[in-house]
Image 1 (cartoon, each protein chain N blue to C red):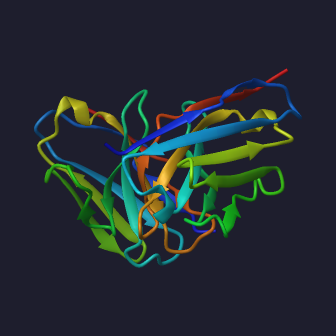
Image 2 (image 1 turned 180 degrees about the vertical axis):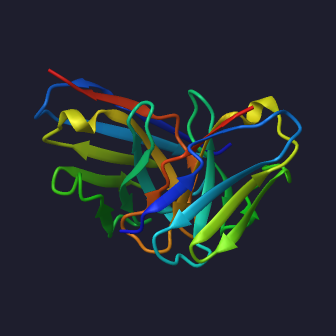
Length: 118
Length: 107
């Protein structure tokens, strides 16, 4: 069964750091692009970052560029998102998602809540 | 950045009827559009990709159409568990991948 499970969310103070993980199973992880998408509770979806199957290329939304780093460990079937210099406006549920061959997202993980507050 | 605009914001439809949701792109995206369903408390799931191709295990009641800048998601024979927020997403010109603001469907 295809499955993505995020972990590492929690409460952090503004300016702090947090690392999210996404454990993948049920598919050949090292052949797929992976993404992070976030959602402020009650609001819409915002794409955050993308990484290619071998980790050689990454992209970021302007709002997180220079603060967030996406990476992956194909030996562990795990995707990461290192979040530094966190801001209150980064508070959201963070989903990892597998990239479809065309550019859609399927499936999605259950999400990890990140709360940035003093 | 391509801006995706969905309408209406909220749609109330009776069980058994049909719902039509719209999505407009600020510039042409060819057929590079996906639709997602997000039920309360759940993660989004893909319904449609390539503007009109149903994802695996998605019932035939869900259909997508459109090309260029105007797209439609049609849900026929509405059921109570179709109550959800529906999002469109373009993957024609990225980064960034962009989503519409969502349409809340009430049954």
